[in-house]
Length: 198
Image (tube, rainbow, N blue to C red; front, top):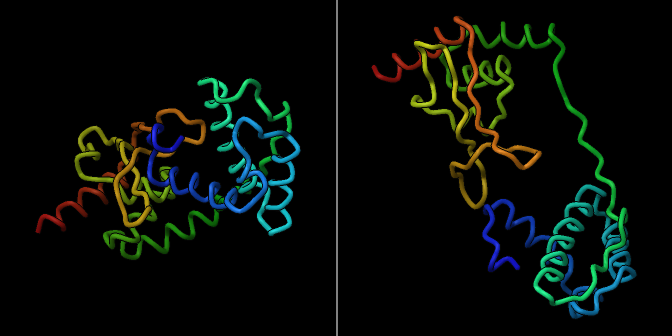
Protein backbone atom coordinates (compact mmCIF):
# COMPACT_ATOMS: atom_id res chain seq x y z
CA UNK A 1 0.00 0.00 0.00
CA UNK A 2 2.73 2.47 0.96
CA UNK A 3 4.78 1.62 -2.13
CA UNK A 4 2.01 2.74 -4.51
CA UNK A 5 0.54 5.60 -2.45
CA UNK A 6 3.16 8.33 -2.13
CA UNK A 7 2.57 10.52 0.93
CA UNK A 8 4.46 13.21 2.79
CA UNK A 9 7.36 11.88 4.89
CA UNK A 10 5.61 12.88 8.13
CA UNK A 11 2.48 10.98 7.08
CA UNK A 12 4.55 7.99 6.03
CA UNK A 13 6.28 7.87 9.42
CA UNK A 14 2.84 7.74 11.08
CA UNK A 15 1.80 4.89 8.79
CA UNK A 16 5.04 3.05 9.54
CA UNK A 17 4.34 3.41 13.26
CA UNK A 18 0.94 1.77 12.70
CA UNK A 19 2.61 -1.06 10.81
CA UNK A 20 5.04 -1.58 13.71
CA UNK A 21 2.04 -1.96 16.01
CA UNK A 22 0.66 -4.61 13.62
CA UNK A 23 3.88 -6.63 13.48
CA UNK A 24 3.93 -9.51 15.91
CA UNK A 25 0.17 -9.45 16.54
CA UNK A 26 -2.46 -11.94 15.45
CA UNK A 27 -3.88 -9.34 13.10
CA UNK A 28 -0.44 -8.61 11.66
CA UNK A 29 0.04 -12.28 10.84
CA UNK A 30 -3.36 -12.65 9.18
CA UNK A 31 -3.79 -12.63 5.41
CA UNK A 32 -5.73 -9.55 4.29
CA UNK A 33 -8.44 -11.78 2.81
CA UNK A 34 -9.02 -13.33 6.25
CA UNK A 35 -9.07 -10.17 8.39
CA UNK A 36 -12.18 -9.95 10.54
CA UNK A 37 -13.72 -7.44 12.91
CA UNK A 38 -12.80 -9.49 16.01
CA UNK A 39 -9.09 -9.45 15.12
CA UNK A 40 -9.23 -5.69 14.57
CA UNK A 41 -10.91 -5.13 17.92
CA UNK A 42 -8.36 -7.38 19.65
CA UNK A 43 -5.50 -5.44 18.00
CA UNK A 44 -6.94 -2.14 19.22
CA UNK A 45 -7.49 -3.52 22.74
CA UNK A 46 -3.88 -4.73 22.75
CA UNK A 47 -2.73 -1.19 22.01
CA UNK A 48 -4.89 0.12 24.87
CA UNK A 49 -3.36 -2.49 27.16
CA UNK A 50 0.09 -1.24 26.04
CA UNK A 51 -0.90 2.27 27.18
CA UNK A 52 -1.46 3.97 23.82
CA UNK A 53 -3.95 6.83 23.94
CA UNK A 54 -7.22 6.79 22.03
CA UNK A 55 -6.11 9.40 19.50
CA UNK A 56 -3.12 7.27 18.47
CA UNK A 57 -5.29 4.16 18.26
CA UNK A 58 -7.85 6.08 16.18
CA UNK A 59 -5.04 7.23 13.86
CA UNK A 60 -3.80 3.65 13.39
CA UNK A 61 -7.37 2.42 12.88
CA UNK A 62 -7.87 5.05 10.15
CA UNK A 63 -4.73 3.88 8.36
CA UNK A 64 -5.85 0.24 8.52
CA UNK A 65 -9.27 1.29 7.21
CA UNK A 66 -7.59 3.00 4.22
CA UNK A 67 -5.60 -0.12 3.43
CA UNK A 68 -8.68 -2.35 3.67
CA UNK A 69 -10.74 -0.01 1.49
CA UNK A 70 -8.00 -0.17 -1.10
CA UNK A 71 -7.88 -3.97 -0.81
CA UNK A 72 -11.65 -4.07 -1.40
CA UNK A 73 -11.37 -1.74 -4.41
CA UNK A 74 -8.71 -3.88 -6.10
CA UNK A 75 -10.46 -7.16 -5.30
CA UNK A 76 -8.06 -8.52 -2.67
CA UNK A 77 -11.01 -8.89 -0.29
CA UNK A 78 -14.67 -9.48 -1.07
CA UNK A 79 -16.16 -7.51 1.83
CA UNK A 80 -15.06 -4.70 4.09
CA UNK A 81 -14.28 -6.22 7.54
CA UNK A 82 -14.63 -3.10 9.69
CA UNK A 83 -18.17 -2.65 11.03
CA UNK A 84 -19.77 0.76 10.65
CA UNK A 85 -19.23 3.13 13.58
CA UNK A 86 -16.55 0.93 15.16
CA UNK A 87 -13.68 3.40 14.88
CA UNK A 88 -12.17 4.55 18.16
CA UNK A 89 -13.27 8.05 19.08
CA UNK A 90 -10.74 10.81 18.70
CA UNK A 91 -10.62 13.30 21.52
CA UNK A 92 -9.70 16.75 20.23
CA UNK A 93 -6.73 18.32 21.94
CA UNK A 94 -7.75 21.24 24.12
CA UNK A 95 -6.87 24.57 22.57
CA UNK A 96 -4.43 26.43 24.77
CA UNK A 97 -5.06 30.11 24.15
CA UNK A 98 -4.09 33.31 25.87
CA UNK A 99 -6.65 35.80 27.06
CA UNK A 100 -6.51 39.21 25.38
CA UNK A 101 -4.85 40.59 28.49
CA UNK A 102 -2.23 37.81 28.55
CA UNK A 103 -1.52 38.28 24.82
CA UNK A 104 -1.08 42.02 25.36
CA UNK A 105 1.35 41.38 28.23
CA UNK A 106 3.40 38.97 26.11
CA UNK A 107 3.44 41.34 23.14
CA UNK A 108 4.47 44.25 25.37
CA UNK A 109 7.38 42.14 26.65
CA UNK A 110 8.39 41.12 23.12
CA UNK A 111 8.26 44.75 21.99
CA UNK A 112 11.28 45.49 24.20
CA UNK A 113 13.31 44.11 21.26
CA UNK A 114 10.92 43.59 18.32
CA UNK A 115 13.68 43.08 15.73
CA UNK A 116 15.06 40.02 17.51
CA UNK A 117 14.15 37.09 15.21
CA UNK A 118 12.53 35.06 18.01
CA UNK A 119 10.58 38.03 19.32
CA UNK A 120 9.38 39.01 15.85
CA UNK A 121 8.34 35.41 15.12
CA UNK A 122 6.31 35.33 18.34
CA UNK A 123 4.70 38.69 17.51
CA UNK A 124 3.74 37.38 14.05
CA UNK A 125 2.21 34.25 15.58
CA UNK A 126 0.30 36.16 18.25
CA UNK A 127 -1.05 38.84 15.91
CA UNK A 128 -1.91 36.64 12.91
CA UNK A 129 -2.73 33.21 14.33
CA UNK A 130 -0.18 31.56 12.04
CA UNK A 131 1.13 28.18 13.16
CA UNK A 132 4.72 27.85 14.37
CA UNK A 133 5.82 25.93 11.26
CA UNK A 134 4.20 28.55 9.03
CA UNK A 135 5.97 31.41 10.79
CA UNK A 136 9.31 29.58 10.57
CA UNK A 137 8.79 29.02 6.82
CA UNK A 138 7.88 32.64 6.08
CA UNK A 139 10.21 34.13 3.45
CA UNK A 140 10.55 37.69 2.23
CA UNK A 141 8.95 36.74 -1.08
CA UNK A 142 5.82 35.86 0.96
CA UNK A 143 5.69 39.34 2.51
CA UNK A 144 4.13 42.22 0.58
CA UNK A 145 4.93 45.30 2.66
CA UNK A 146 3.38 47.75 0.18
CA UNK A 147 -0.01 46.01 0.32
CA UNK A 148 0.57 44.97 3.96
CA UNK A 149 -0.18 41.29 3.23
CA UNK A 150 1.34 37.98 4.27
CA UNK A 151 1.09 34.93 2.02
CA UNK A 152 1.18 31.59 3.82
CA UNK A 153 2.44 29.15 1.18
CA UNK A 154 4.81 26.93 3.16
CA UNK A 155 5.27 25.38 6.56
CA UNK A 156 8.49 24.07 8.04
CA UNK A 157 8.13 20.42 8.96
CA UNK A 158 10.54 18.26 10.92
CA UNK A 159 10.94 14.74 9.62
CA UNK A 160 14.51 13.45 9.67
CA UNK A 161 15.64 17.07 9.39
CA UNK A 162 13.76 20.21 8.44
CA UNK A 163 12.09 20.85 5.10
CA UNK A 164 9.54 23.15 3.50
CA UNK A 165 6.13 21.59 3.14
CA UNK A 166 2.66 22.82 2.32
CA UNK A 167 0.68 24.36 5.20
CA UNK A 168 -1.21 21.85 7.32
CA UNK A 169 -4.98 21.76 7.01
CA UNK A 170 -6.84 19.54 9.51
CA UNK A 171 -9.61 19.03 6.92
CA UNK A 172 -7.19 17.82 4.26
CA UNK A 173 -7.70 20.78 1.91
CA UNK A 174 -5.40 23.53 0.71
CA UNK A 175 -4.27 25.68 3.66
CA UNK A 176 -2.38 28.27 1.61
CA UNK A 177 -3.83 31.68 2.28
CA UNK A 178 -3.20 35.39 2.23
CA UNK A 179 -4.28 38.05 4.71
CA UNK A 180 -3.72 41.65 5.62
CA UNK A 181 -1.55 42.80 8.52
CA UNK A 182 -1.57 45.97 10.59
CA UNK A 183 0.72 48.91 10.03
CA UNK A 184 2.67 48.17 13.23
CA UNK A 185 3.60 44.63 12.14
CA UNK A 186 4.36 45.84 8.61
CA UNK A 187 6.71 48.48 10.04
CA UNK A 188 8.48 45.90 12.22
CA UNK A 189 8.92 43.61 9.21
CA UNK A 190 10.28 46.48 7.12
CA UNK A 191 12.78 47.36 9.85
CA UNK A 192 13.80 43.70 10.22
CA UNK A 193 14.34 43.38 6.48
CA UNK A 194 16.46 46.54 6.41
CA UNK A 195 18.52 45.21 9.31
CA UNK A 196 19.07 41.91 7.49
CA UNK A 197 20.07 43.73 4.32
CA UNK A 198 22.64 45.76 6.28
